[in-house]
Length: 139
Image (cartoon, rainbow, N blue to C red; front, side, top):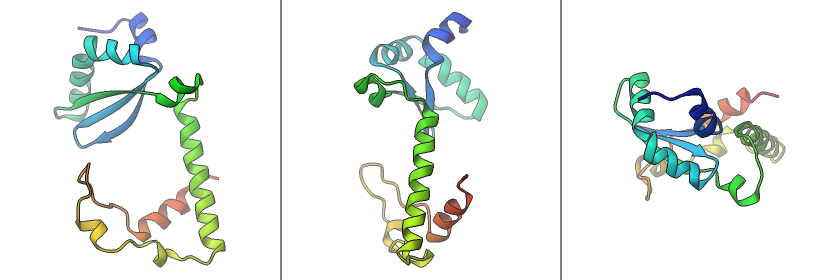
């Protein structure tokens, strides 16, 4: 099975990869109709294509871009990336002005060793990692 340019424009152009978690790829779609269509018609093709790219079997999950669907907006993924960077910059500025240091950002040890429901994940970033991220934020 292949995907025609017209089908790409109709069903995939307005999608975006929002998360990769081990073997699961989460793809945001503009609405519930597109989600149903992609799940029923193209999930296998997309999963197989991603598996060829990454070299292992993957699961694909389609999620509705709920914010745009609920508010009738068309905010692009880059808007959220910019918003996230600006939020992190403001947080870093606040922490610096409040006198917080890198040491204040270290979580207690159990956050790094005890999985938290429902995802059973542990914290991945230590204080030095967080500060390195702050330093790398584009202006």
